Structures are given as structure tokens and as C-alpha cells.
Amino acid sequence: MTRSPYDYNKFADEASLEIQLLNGKLIFSATDLSNYLACPHLTLLNRRTVQGGPRPRVFPDASLEVLRQRGHEHEQYVLARLRVNDGHRVTEIYHSDRDESRLERYERLAAETVEAIRAGVDLIYQGCLFDGFWLGFPDFLRKVDLPSKLGGWSYEVIDAKLARGARAARCSRC
Image (cartoon, rainbow, N blue to C red):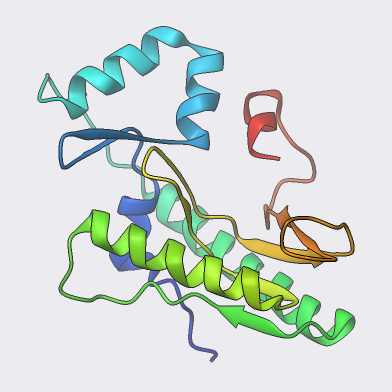
């Protein structure tokens, strides 16, 4: 079994958090943008919750863990396929359990991702994109031959989804 840079049991809830409040600042993700486009009122409720308002009731759903595990297995399959079939040199950004705040973790992971981007690696697995306001965890960032400020290359996001196609509510994540 290959070592996963992403401990799904430990960080899955954190990665799926919607709006976050860290050091007094609201942090948003692509999911928050999708939620807003689908229902602005949902965004208002989520923001109110993160700022100390009432928390919505959570109903246990055993199928979510099954879906999470299937998603992880699919992601590992896509990673192996990209390594073998495409011969990509892969840099994995490890979401390790260090003694640091969530904000410090995001900043560290983003710095490691930027370092890999500047180095021009072929493929970045489980990178972190964070500018202090927007947060994202793309499954893969793949180097493409499109000039940018980096030089003769740039990166595109590859999202390893089990679904056969994008749903309308998720198009902002594509």
C-alpha cells in the first residue's frame, strides 16, 4: 500500500469545511462559491454559523464514509495511471499532523506547493492553493506547455472525481 499524503480520517472533515474563520478572517473555498451560486441564503447561514451562530443539525450518514473511501481509492488509481502511463515526475504535498494551527498549516502547504510550481515539476499531488482569503486543495496540478510568469510552462488543475461528468452546481470547481 502506498503512503498517502492525505490522511483522510484525520483531515477529511477539515478539508470539507465550508467557510472558515481563522484568526478573525473569513476563508472561502470553491465549494463556498458553488454554494453561493446555488443558494446565497445558504452562504449567509454558513457564515453566521462560523461566526458563532447556531449550528445546523447533523444527521449521521454511513454512506458518506463509503463514498469518501471510494473517492480516495479512485484518486490513488488516477495517481498511479498518471505516473505509469504518462511517466510524470510527481511531487506529493504531505498534509502531516504537525503541532501548528490550521492557518499555519495552510500557509506551509501553500508555500510547499508554490516551491514545487517554481521548480517546474511535472505533477503536484494534493497541493494547496491559499492566498489568505481563498483556499483550495486540487487533487492534481499538471504542468502544461503554456508560457507564464514561471517561464515556458504553467499548470492546470486535474480533479479526480468518480462522477462521469461535472454537475451544474460544481462547474466552478472544474
